[in-house]
Amino acid sequence: MTPTPIKDFQDTLWKAADKLRGSMDASQYKDIVLGLVFLKYVTDAFDARRQELRAELEEEGATEEETLEELEDRDAYLEKNVFWVAPKARWDYLQRHSKGKTSDAGGEFKAIGKLIDEAAETLMADNPSLEGTLPHNYNSESVDQRRLGELVDLFSTTRFTAEGPERARDLLGEVYEYFLARFASAEGKRGGEFYTPRPVVRTLVEILEPTEGRVYDPCCGSGGMFVQAEKFLEAHDRDPSAIAIYGQELNERTWRMARMNLAIHALSAKGLGERWGDTFARDIHPGVEMDYVLANPPFNIKDWVRNTDDTRWMYGVPPEKNANFGWMQHIISKLSPQGEAGVVMANGTMTSNTSGEGEIRKNMLEDDIVSCVITLPAQLFRATGIPVCVWFFAG
Image (cartoon, rainbow, N blue to C red; front, side, top):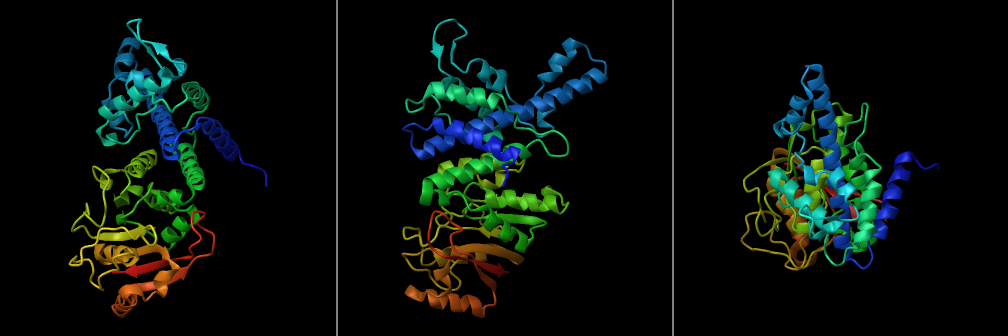
C-alpha cells in the first residue's frame, strides 16, 4: 500500500518528536509533545482568523493604523470561537527564539523551554476555558533544549490548518489522534488508560447513533468517544452542537489531554468538570440523566472506592476486588428513560459468578435493561490480552 501524504507527514513528525524523548518518563514526554502540537494549532487558528479579519477591514477601507488596532482586539477572535493568543505566546515568537533568547532587558538568557512555559501560562491566563490544560514543564532538566528547539523549527514548516472544504482543525485532529495512538502503543498497558482503539470507538458510536442530547463517558480518557460522536454527526450532516458532552476522568494528565483534544475539535470541555476526579468516589454530574453513554472502563480494577450502601447498586453490590459491575451499574444509573449505553468490558463479565456477579447479571437481565452483548475480535487492544465484549443497555 502506498503511504498517503498525511501518513508521511505524521510519521515525519513522530520521528522528530521521538528524538526528544531521551531519558524522559513516557508520560512526561507525551505531555510535552501533545502540548506543543496544541500550541502550534492554537496559533495557526489565530493566524487564520487574523488574515480573515485583515481582509474584511481592507474591504471596508480601513487605514493600516486602524487595521493594526483591530487585529489586536481579542473580542474579534473570541466571537468566532478562536482562542486569543498574546504576542509572546504566538508561534512565530517561539520560532524566532527556538535556540533561546536574551531577556528584553538584555540580561538573563531564556531557553526555548522557558519561553514555551511562559507562552502556555499566558495562553491559559487569557483563555479561562484552557485553565489547567497545558503542561508547563518544558524548561525542566529532563528536556533536551536543543532538540526541543529543533522540534519547534520542524513544526514551524507545517501549518496545522487546512484550506478548502475541510475545516481548519481537521489536520491537527488527525495528527493529535495519531500521536495518541503511538503513545498508547509505546506505553503498553498504561496506554490503555487514555486510549481506546478507533475501530472500537467507531463501532459503539455507529450502533448507538448519538444525534442529539447528552453524551456521557464516566472514564473518558483522552476524549476519543466524544470526538467520534462529533465525526458521526458531521458524516450524517447533523449539527455537532446538537450534543452536549459530559465526562469524568481520574488521571490528571489524561484529563488535560482530553481537554486539549476537545478544544482541537471545537468541542466544549466544560462538561469535563473543573478538575479530574474519581467517578465512584464523587460523581461530578449528580442527578444529570444521560441520553447516550459511551465507555471503555478499565477492566477488573481491584483497588476502587466502594460504598455498600450506594444507591447505584440497584442490581446488587459489586465485589470489593472487581469494579466491572460497579461501572456497569453506575452507567445504568445515569441513563435517561430513553437513554442508551454501550460499554466495553472484559468477556468474563458474561460468565463470572464470583462474589455475587452472577446474581447481579441475572438481575440486570430480568429487568430487561440489557439490549445485547457483542463479543469483539481478539487482539484489538494491544495493551491487554483479555478478550473483550460490548454491553448495550437501554433505559
